Image (tube, rainbow, N blue to C red; front, top):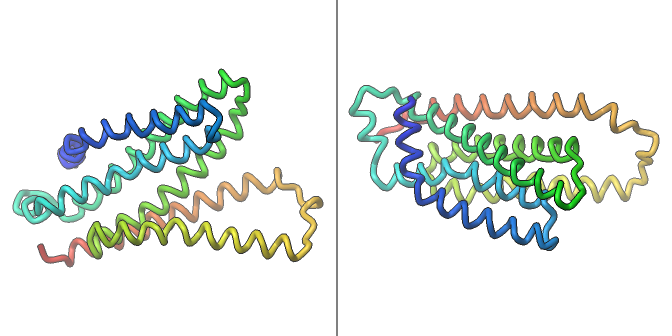
Amino acid sequence: MKALIIKDLLNLKSYFKQLVFIYGFYLVFSLMGIWDISFFVSIATMLGAMMFISTMSYDEMSKWDAFALSAPILRKDLVTSKYLLMLFSLLGSTGLSLAIAVPVLLIQNSLALIELLAYTGSVALVIMTGFSIILYLAFKVGVEKARIAMLAVFLLPTLLIFILGKNIARSGIDFSQVNLEQMLPAAAISAVIVAAAVILIMYRLSVKTVQKKEY
């Protein structure tokens, strides 16, 4: 398992160099005030977590899975290593984005740490849930088709939230009587449970797909 992850990290040397340039680009624009630093956090977290897609492209081009299965490697390990890589890359990119965002906000004298952590955690949770679905699709139909599906996975919920928000605004519901602060802990716990359930389901479906797949 460890060797599979190390193999993927070695394949990502060029990707890391590209990330440095992209992070610098978005950071400069955030410092200039063109974009809010929260936008940088979102982009940095997503791009970092996307590393697993590049590793799957490399594997697909080199027919790696077929070669790996000729060695004493379980099919389940091929899936588990990718999900772990996604988790590690997400945690790493989230931590890095926070390490950059906090000093910037301190310099700008606008640091609201609780709000920043809550926003970053929400972004990371959404990205991890969405990418777990993308990872399953990559095993199921291939990397290129999964890339196309990625647009639907992330844009569809955004569109639904936008439509829901518009309908709520038109309904005239008064939210001034609702204590949102008391609802936040329950909402956060519910979101974590739903995300964990989706990720676990996608992982098990991915394992079943790879076990039945012919290479």
